[in-house]
Length: 438
Image 1: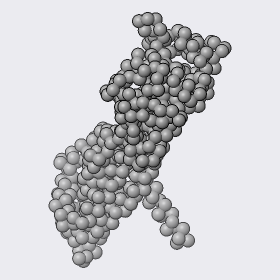
Image 2 (image 1 turned 90 degrees about the horizontal axis):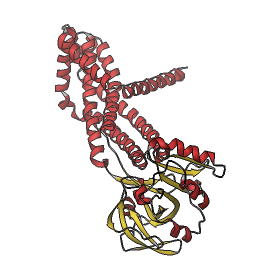
Image 3 (image 1 turned 180 degrees about the vertical axis):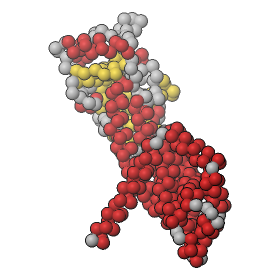
């Protein structure tokens, strides 16, 4: 029976910790600011509040004498915040890169039911029919701005490890420069249609060896020359691009995997989709590239976010118990001091508030330290991960102000929970008992 009660007590404490952390993290910044203003007003304009301010000042002034125990709280919370912000920045960076790849003025056409380009297939005859659909923007010569594209996955050695990893090779049509005006050659030149030439994205060049202009690579037992490097500011920077007909011949592919078109306007999407649906020869689906790449980013970003929060919760529980131990020790050290204050007229609320504020001050310092370290080490840090097409997607961590604020809220939540029980103990400790403690 005792073991059951002990287990239930521990489980209850664990649930209280999780609920408290969740409550703090979900509170909007405006609410937290309002609570801080109310607390400051209470401490400035009420007698009990001024007592709380006095006791808090005494406690804070003795932190230097308890520097070792205080450092445990600061370092523990800094670690939690640093890891949390870094992992969330990874997910946000990947999502930002993929979402920036698409827009509402271009649409991608895939085989019906396909969720990614590698699982799609569009025949050459169907590609011709799609290009004649209404709603597609035309160039000065009256040609529809479309790009029938083929995606294959090749192996190239990574610079960091020397081992082979997947890289995406995209065959594009001659209208790709009008379709994606954000692609800009920064070194070398464009590839020549009909030749085994490729341009490489800046991100892919950073991650893979042998992709400098003038070098040759082996793809499907054929030699291809790298003639240029491009920037696009999106996921296409992780790719190698070349002429779609040349790549199709090299890999013995008869059709394409997707058709990307530039619409006359975002409103033209409905007419474009209706035209495709009305043709019984076509079994395809169209969506804006913004919707397509947003959907591609959601799954992996969600996994990264769940993993990050899970790891942070586990570390947060450890940091909370570290804060509990440190603050219990601080309360025991100041037992006589607290008892003396209560004996001369200070009530319990000022004592509780002082211990809570002291713990949350240390937590705030730890949170700011962890957030700063995460920003310093990981903001714009370039990595790659396996994308939806089973190839490496190069992206940068994005440590935004919103993520930093999330980390600080986690720190304050840990400080709140870690200081609550010691504060209650300090307030409930009998005065006569506390005066006898050393």
